[in-house]
Image 1 (tube, rainbow, N blue to C red):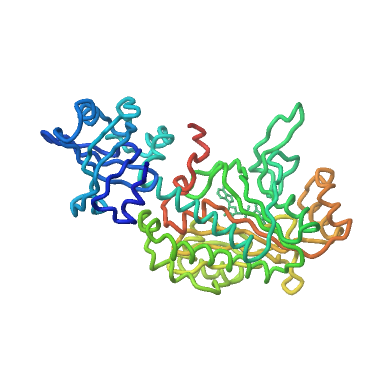
Image 2 (cartoon, protein in one colour):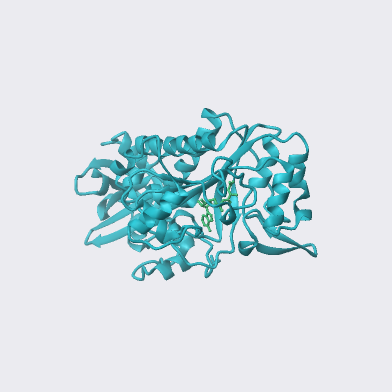
Length: 431
Ligand code: 4AD
């Protein structure tokens, strides 16, 4: 029966005869011995192949193997403190499944080259740890919404006729002779469902034709977009902090080994406690200037300003009540603070910056049309969206969390590109 490396380590299977399937991670030949570190999806383990302990064909296979050749190994588990993980397999059999060709990732580890061979680099220990961590973080976010809050997940279209976040970053496509776009956000479709299902979310790709080359912009990213009937902005922010806290806390408790494998200091994440900090836009602008940045009231925060605001923080920070005229058409004005909207961006600490944008939505027809006209939107593209305000409208709120930005922060990565298998940016769409 085939076992895996993780099980051997977990069950401390010393003295047991095992069979493993995997790939060569690295290889060292020394006289009558070949030391092959093999990997499978659960970890790495050293296999010691001694010439007189295996058949002739197996000895040849062990000598011929390349890095990333695939193989089957049988042998006995021995404790060995010098081996990675503290155990070694003393081989009784070693069979190549596919020897393949010499693996191209060897000396050149430049970022550009690793992006060219991304489909192979995804086998690396670093990328494996990140992809596993992303899987768990995705699951915890979903789990919070599904099990703790009773949300329904819905499936929106990816091809749409209108934008939601302004025209400048729309990817245009030819839809059977008509102009259409890849969705920038599924928010408007999520809003449809609050009138039927109450609390819903979408987890799907959003597309932004971002011309900027930054460490936090992708042209295609995964977007978690909850939308809730009868939620005001205060409830909306509380839901966000509870959800983010749940996922971070569960990751720290259940998978500290993955956080550590990604180089993340787990103790820093333990400081992410509830409630998160809150600051209004006007105060945040003053704070940026006080801390040595330079910005005017009425301007939006860029990466530099967000870094200034969050550099020394340990918890995420909500910035709320932005000026109405720099925000999207669907955000409701705050009657208590004229000229501002009932919105908030959630900034991750230690310079990572914005991970969530959310707001209370305008739910009255006239108010929405007035704002759309002010922002010069073509009303006829949005007739269906206006119908939601024509027929039984109710107050509602929602937000969008960029999965890759969230993962970048939780794992404390320098660049967003490693949070997603195949990053799409202004200069790369291959492989
Ligand atoms: O602030 P944004 O543009 O808001 C919306 O799209 C709303 N319609 C969401 C909603 O209320 N349902 O984007 C939301 C989040 C940002 O906070 C950020 O995390 C992520 O989406 N994001 C990006 N992530 C990676 N690359 C990009 N180019 C991104 N643009 C936005």
